[in-house]
Length: 411
Image 1 (cartoon, rainbow, N blue to C red):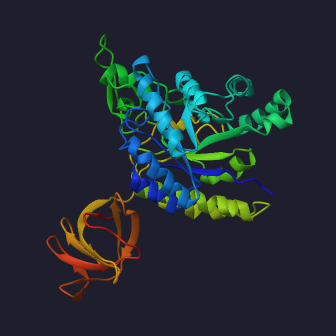
Image 2: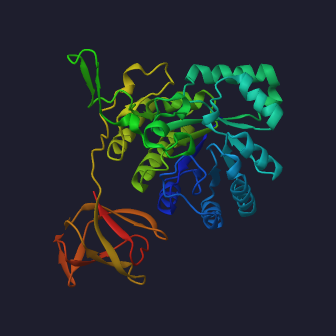
Image 3: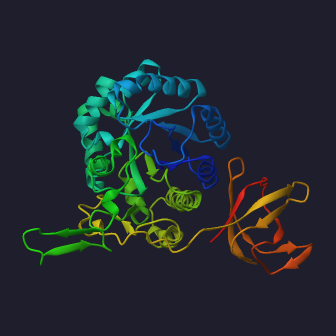
C-alpha cells in the first residue's frame, strides 16, 4: 500500500488555522510573536497555544510550533518560556535549527524538526543530526531534487541500517514562495532596511524594481522590471505530486504564514484532493489529467506564477516573475451586525461597494474562523433582493454560525 505523506498547512492567525483544517490539513505550523521566521505575520501569543492545541485535537490534526529563527543570548529566557509553554500545552513538535533552541527543546523533552534553514541536503548531514542530537525529522533544503531525495533515502539505509533509516522522516516544501537566497538565508534586507531576514523580518527588497547604471558610461543602464530578476515564481508541485510522493517524502509543507485565509483554504484543498486521488489509485493512472483543474483555483489566490522549484533541476527561467498574478481581487464588503442562531440567518451591514445575488463571499472572524459561500439569495427590509448597495442592511442565511463584528468580503 502506498504511503501518503502528511499535508501540513500554514496558520498565521486563527482564521487561517480554521481555513487549513476545514480544507483537510493533517497538521498546521504556526509561530509566536518575536520568535519565528514570519515576523510580519499576525502570529500568536503564548496564551493562544492551549486553544490552538484544542482546535487541532478536535480536528484530528497535529500542531507544530515554528521557532526557526536565529536566537541571541538576550533571547534565551524568552525561548525557555516559549518551549516550556509549548510542552505544557501539548504542542506536538518544534521546528528549529538554532542549536540553542535545539538543546533547550531536548532538555525539556520536546521533539524538534530540523528547519530548512539548516540546509540539509545529503544523507551524511541527516545521519549527523540523528546520531548526535536525536533529530528524526528534516525539512530538506529547497535545492534538493526528486532524484536527490531518492538517493538520500537509499544512502541512509546503507549508512544507518534499515531499522534506523526507517525512523527518519523527510519533509519538503510543496507549494508557496521561493527565495533567491540559499534556503532563505539572506542579508540584503538587513543591510538595506535594517530588518533581518534571518530573524523573520525580511522586507523583501529583492522583489522591487531597480535601475542599474554604469557610473563611468551613462549610456549603459538597465531597469529590472517588470520581470524582477530577484523575485522568483512560487513553487507548485501539483503537476508532479505523484512523483514527489513516490520519492518517499513523509510530509508536504505549504508555505504561507503571511498569506490570507482564502490562499490557505484553496491551496490545502487542492493538495488534499490530489493526495486523496493518489491514495485511491494504486498505479497512478490518470493523475496528469486529474491535477489540471486543481491548479485553476490557485491562480485566483495570491501567487507570482508557478515553478517546479529545484525538483527537476535548476529552475533557470523561474527567477523572473512578473510580480503578483492573482486573477481575483478580494474587497471588504461589510460586517455582521447580528446572528440569529435558530433561523441560521445573519444581519449584515454593507459598508463598502455592492453585492449581487450569486456573488462569492467570505466571512472572517477570530472565533468564526473562515466561511466561504455564494450569496445566492438575501433580503432587504424583509423583501427578496437581487442586489445591495453601500448603506443597505441585508439578511442572509449562512451554512454555519457567524458572529457580531465578523468581516464580510466579496471577490
